[in-house]
Structure formats: C-alpha cells, structure tokens
Length: 70
Image (cartoon, rainbow, N blue to C red):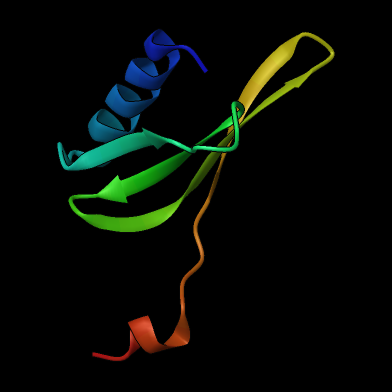
C-alpha cells in the first residue's frame, strides 16, 4: 500500500473510533496488509482486497477469552 493509503486508513480509524492512538505499520513480508496498533498494543491486521477493480479493506482482530476476564 502507498503511504497515502496508510495515512487515509489511519485517519479513518482515528476518526471513526475517536482515538488518536491508532497506528498502522507496514508488514515486512506483505505488500497488501498492515499491522494495527492501539498505542503500543498490537490489535489486528488490516488487509487490502482489490477484486474486480473494487477496493475494500478488511480489519481482522482476534479477541482472546483471557482478555475478556477483568
């Protein structure tokens, strides 16, 4: 993804969730996905899907049961 794509997506997440702590980081071995961080915590992966000329982005976040225990 281009730097412009990364900035647009990062700004979207920050605005959508009202949190400036979202950061998107390039993945070393992949050009179509990014790592998503909330502050310093890795929370998921964002993938670009370019199918039939239509671009979409998919955010994948796993929630572990242990994380639900307070």
